[in-house]
Length: 259
Image 1 (cartoon, one colour):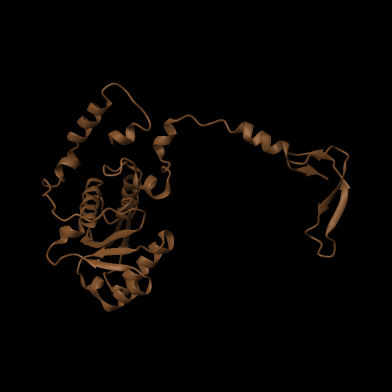
Image 2 (cartoon, rainbow, N blue to C red; image 1 turned 90 degrees about the horizontal axis):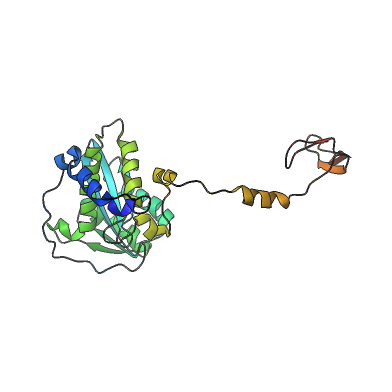
């Protein structure tokens, strides 16, 4: 929140005010996690987007099952509500994600039945994706996905999520997560993934730039006609006639004339 605020505004002791808001947030304190334990396993750092992705399921949570995918380089998360954890359904969602971001080099998962199924292994092999599984009974080795699952659950709880608003709250959470500066990146997942910031309602704090000059420059390049000038107009009603000719009677707009 401190990093995000620096992109938009400042006032004296703004960091202290932000700390006070977060420390006194009832929902945040009610659902806060236990202190984290030190994780001994460390993955090698990824060097580009979608070089390595971490995948996992969350749920049933609030009556739904979530397919979680997190990119190791940008921390960009993808979350899809799925009907079940079946292998065909998981492959379909992976294809949907890969269509947007391309094929990853490595996919990390636990040893769940979906991920160890022969059909899923063949899908990865046919697409040139190396599959790396976590150690049995050590889910922390897939810590990137595990941590995000906890973050998502806690955020949805704090938003008072119910079955009636779960989809809207999920999209709200993902949007803010993607535009929030990530502590490991010092920039947002969106900036790391796309090289630009996502526009949000915070951008309304800035005054709008004057685009009238650009519009006027573009209009100067538009061909202009004067009253009485002879012109040819495209005929769309009569299939036997392509053009009809006449004179300009009056000007109705920058590009519109009455013939």
